[in-house]
Image (tube, rainbow, N blue to C red; front, side):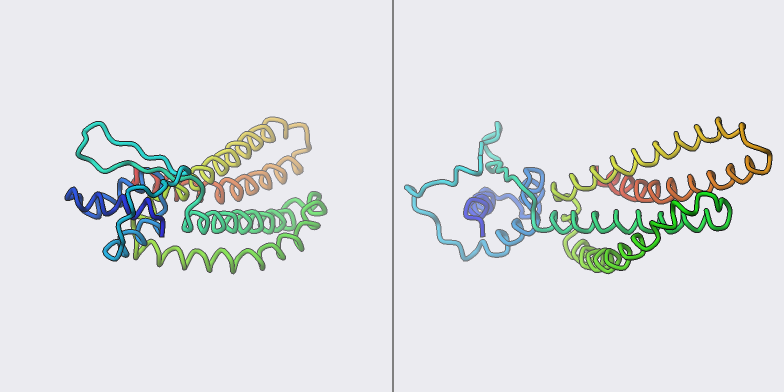
Length: 230
């Protein structure tokens, strides 16, 4: 248990601050939810530190201007839950890329066979990645969903929010790049014969729908979630 965090919780209680308000302040300051709950749940058995004990210089603290509020504390690095979310999002990315590669291959088999040779080589790799990443993704998803139901405050964990913001940025960039490439291909596709043009147009449309659908779906899900939290 973090000594400074426990002292902060005790000081907040002595000043009449409710535990829920303390949780909110600590989350905003950058503390992980697991650490906060450990300090609050075990706070009653704490032994007060001696006045001449050395303070932890790795954690900074400062008084608020009002004077009657608890000291604000800041921690760096990823919380335990934040690290779990990073693994979850990485697994999500691998699953999304693998599913996309398989769907692109199917499109080329059914519509544009000339491009199938390129995607054919990616099918074994994508399938292997999907077999490995899917159980990790599902396992962490179920674990984190249970955690979110038990501790809703975990959604405000700074480590998690940074990971979500990075996920939103990546999916947005992928979607925009694919949309630009699709428009470019439509503009330059007129040089082919009528049949080839229709085939390529249909294939490019389905390829764009797959990529934008996967990236856009992930982006929209977490964008809505962040909008509610903000």
